[in-house]
Picture 1 (cartoon, one colour):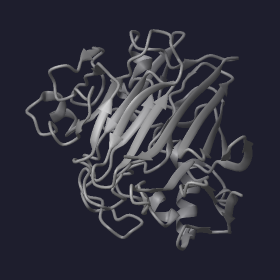
Picture 2: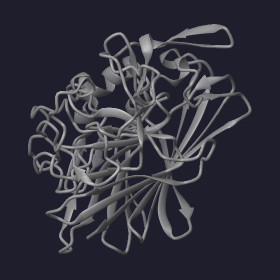
Picture 3: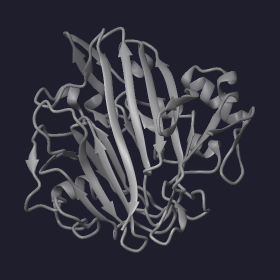
Amino acid sequence: MITLSACPCLLRSWFGYLALTALCLTTMRSSSGQTMEDFDSIQLATLKNSSGMTVKVTNYGAIVTSIVVPDRQGKLADVALGYNRIEDYINAVDKPYFGAIVGRYGNRIAKGKFAIGGETYSLAVNNGENHLHGGVVGLDKVVWSLKPIVVPGAQAVQLSYLAKDKEEGYPGNLQITVTYALNNQNELKVDYLATTDKATPVNLTQHTYFNLKGEGEGDILDHQLMLNANAYTPVDAGSIPTGEIAPVKGTPFDFTTLKPIGRDIDQAHEQLKFGMGFDHNFVINRAPGDASMQLAARVVEPKSGRVLEITTTEPGVQFYCGNFLDGRLKGKSGKAYVKRGGFCLETQHYPDSPNQPKFPSTILEKGKAYSSSTVFKFSVQ
């Protein structure tokens, strides 16, 4: 049975209560236009399987707050970075997007502008001169509707949100549904569905930071990573793609076989300088037009033996290794999140696709449906 906790201004976590202060409610109401009652309805759902894995999801930002999985000895640890108090998600310095669904457009759009059908749209600019992860109040900062649903062989919750026309500058009313389903094979499946009444860019992704040693247990540079990608999209100094699709062979970006994340991260390479390390979109190996589930990445943590495999229908995956974490943020265990204390593997379309005609399109037309799936599978070796 799915555990669902709810209480006005309080959200129960896996070891305590998450307090939501009146000040935070007022601030969020003025930023997003939502009402006080919306923030009184924050909930936390707990998904459990027969293998000892637990996943917790809140309807604030559709955030995955916790992923507890065993190591090779059967010892459980929470491998997802995050907080115990909802106010910390709301007020976090530097807004790291821990565990959230981001969008309407995950990643960057150059100068916050794009055109559809000859009409130019201006979005909120919140990352230098560019638009990032849906804007100032993106999907990670709103309250979704949440309900348990029946999925054969899994425990599941469905979250829904209507992003209104002109919200953060985007055209069209976009109805979004995200489903999290946990099965007994330690697979967390994330399904996305969206429809619109006007053509609009859509690029949704899940933004969990992982540390397979356990959240707060130092950096992730010893994790071994394989990316099923022979190419990546280089960026300029503002992290906007140049339009080139470049081969990874012979560069620090070659993760076609398992290697430690930290092996090449400090090489003298312009792209590493621009990203302060790895913060780039990798082009998943697949045939043109193929939207079937495909392996995107495999991560092995040698000490614990934990393994994470990610499969997706998306054409790309953004690999980010926590370059901007600096120890100021303290997580669920009370430990500081040090530089490169977590990694993200954000399955997605490519950054700035609305302004890059050679990239796969992210424009959702009226009457069409946006559909995407990603599976996070945990195991040990």
